[in-house]
Amino acid sequence: MALKKIRLELARTREHPEGSSEHGYEFVAPLDAEGHFDVDEWRTSRDKCHVHRFWRGEDDQRGMLIHRGQRWAFHYDDGDDEDEEPIFRFDRHTFVQGEYVTITEHDGEQRTFRIVNVK
Image 1 (cartoon, one colour):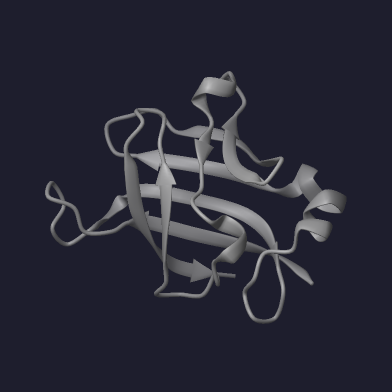
Image 2 (tube, rainbow, N blue to C red):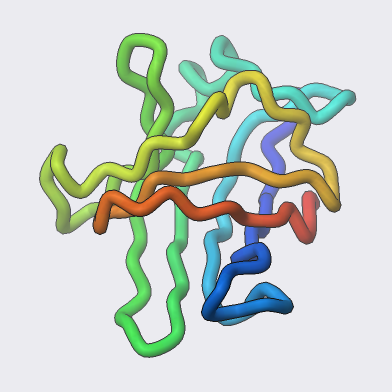
C-alpha cells in the first residue's frame, strides 16, 4: 500500500469543450497496486491525505480527504460541513490515468474530472 498524489482536471463541459487543466484537484490517498482506495490505510494516514482545489479565477482551497459513514468527501480548512464536496463512488473507482470521477462541488453541481496523473 502506498500514498499516491492524484491530479484531477475538469473533463469536457459546455463551457470547456476540451476540458480544462486550470480547473481541478490534487490530493493524496492510499491506493493499492491496482489503483483502488484502501480505507484501512486511510485511517492510519488520514493526516497526510490533503487536497488542493485549483480553479481559475478563484482562490485556491486546501483541505483534507474525509470519510463519514459510507461517504467520502473533500473538506476544506476554512469551510463548514456544508462546504464539503462529496465524491461519487470514490471507494469503487480505479485511480489510474485516463479514468473519470464525479465530484459534487460547493455550488451543488456535479462535475466530472479526468484522472491525469497518479504518482
